[in-house]
Length: 515
Image (cartoon, rainbow, N blue to C red; front, side, top):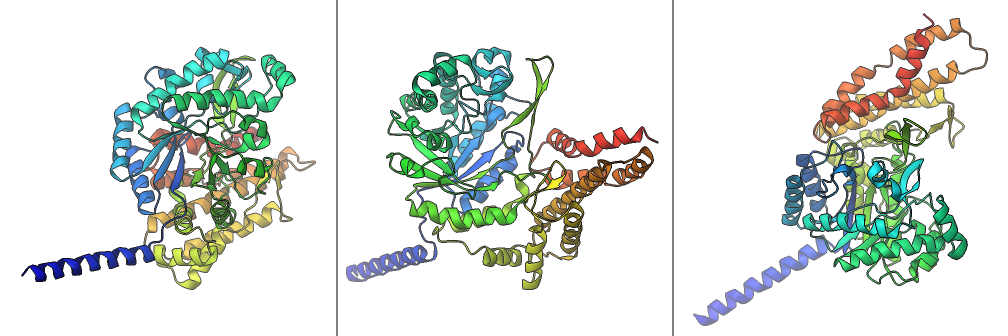
């Protein structure tokens, strides 16, 4: 009897080991211990049910880290002026962090602490921390004592709700270095790299003193490698690269030789993406190229960034120094429209082998939407057509005219309209809406170009009024609300529609006086 029991136990152990081995073969271990996704809530706050749904989607795909750029949506207790009208309650934040804990998702708070802090510095309470009194985006690094007091308060608050071993302190795109007279003096004495590095060291030391590891973007340290000196060994740099040369910001080898832990970061939404343009092919190539590169470089983590805006704001001044409001310079389509790119990233980080984008896209279209092979090819051709931006009325990086781009985009919209998805139809509708918005935008650009042609008379301008009125803004606004009501608040969607249609309405009102 004892022999029989022993044999059964041995057999059971064998099958369990075989099952585990089989799982290891079919589900390879990613080379990145930290597999992250960055969520930017600066202008597109997401209601909690949708936020939890996205978190679960990411975990099921292999993500174990969420970098939350809460910005004004986080409800700081001791600094209540920082929160905006879409801020979550503290109970909501705590419940979300607790939920993420149940699905093994580490939530790293991203608290910008140098540049990109206009949402803090816009308040007169913090005016003495500004590097420039006409651009509220950056802290004056000479004001270390005042800044240290503020950010210790903010970091402690974040630590009280988050359980991650990390705090992301930002540190990127500090365009205003040396604007203040105080900063100019320090630059003259020790150089701009030390101006940046000394302030960053203070922040990193604060984070380490609070028992956490500081994480920051690597662009400025790459530009000024002397800034790396003296930073605590716990510091982690994120090398963000959206398709450019590895030495774009500076000598990459110096970062590699610094001894600090490094993570990489591609993107699914970045410049020049906006409501009217999503450069699908560019982001697929970024995933295909950079994820394997990050593995080869020995990066310990990979974080997919997803920017809702550029982080640059256009101020509305009340006086020469007082700002009424700040408008995001670039706004993009909500994250609800980018499941395919998210899925591509999740697939790529499983092994970090180069992703075959064509095979992935065709497979995704067939499996996710039930399209045939032929229709999958049509789908990709339609959403990736003429991916060029327009600046000052001129297409960039193409010989095509605006009207030629418009014809191609209308054809793409027609193709998408004829395709018949049999699964995940709502997700597919986002592509159609994005194409329709681009047709509307290019139609406007064509009208604007003709309106600005040399020698246009009042009589020649009048017919353009009818064209502007026919751009169907209300129809697209309704569709935008219908498709994004789960991932945005009603007031956000109303604002997005208004801003997206802003140029159309301005030109229309100007021309209507000619009737």
